[in-house]
Image (cartoon, rainbow, N blue to C red; front, side, top):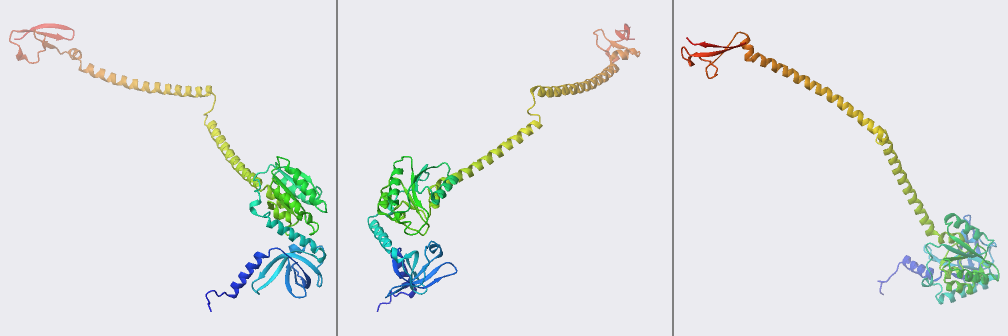
Length: 395
């Protein structure tokens, strides 16, 4: 025995879980309810059985809130849901998204047959779906003009993207003629060139109420549409053929409106944020400039030219006054020095010396005689006195 590929219980259970949950995402089962419990949490727990087997089932509060009857033990029902494996016990169960008394089982059978046929043709493939426009300017809506779904969508459009144009094509959304009317609505809106996106849908209801959106003709019209289509039928737990074939399925009509303009709303928010930032910067700059302007005014930088001239003239006059004072002091100082020099010169002047009774001797060549030996005896010379000259002879 080769033990290399031995699996643990958990590993085997995990593989079975993956196998079951990936292949049984939507099944329709008929059986009798037993062991029914409506828990205080709102969830419903029960067993579906027939004469040979039993299957545990659960219907959570969000799904069972739309039931139009009260499930109970012994009731024959047709349910729709997905299979799930509870790994802790290694048990599989069905998680329901819809339940009806067994009388409408034929509708579920028709639903499954249509679903398989369209799926085999590739109508549900991602490659067949068109991308939604990022910034639609005109959106068409096919729904009842009196329904709450339309009011909810319009409220969102007006609040989040009032600039988007909305064109409404009223249509029946319930009854035997509804599917044909919805198909016509899609065709009518497709002829309007300006329309960028179409939304079809309605509010919640029973499986029979939503049946027009499981119509095969409607599904093919959605697939062939040249305009991208969002399908928004019922509540989040309601899934129709239209949802599967549409370019995008929205869980509710309100969600469809939000999805359609999500990019526009985000861009608008970003623009608002950037606008506020720019305004704050501009206001800050303006405030700074005004502060600088006020400071300049306070420093008299922007007064009238005549005032500037007067101010500078006053400065020049002050400079002139100060200059005259300084020059006066300089001249006075110079005059004092000149008087001192004059007095010194007068003291040293030969004339003043002569006036005191002295004389100066000159030889015949008019040279000053400072040494008597430089002249001979009986040689004449001249004497210069204060009031004239006279001749003299050396003895």
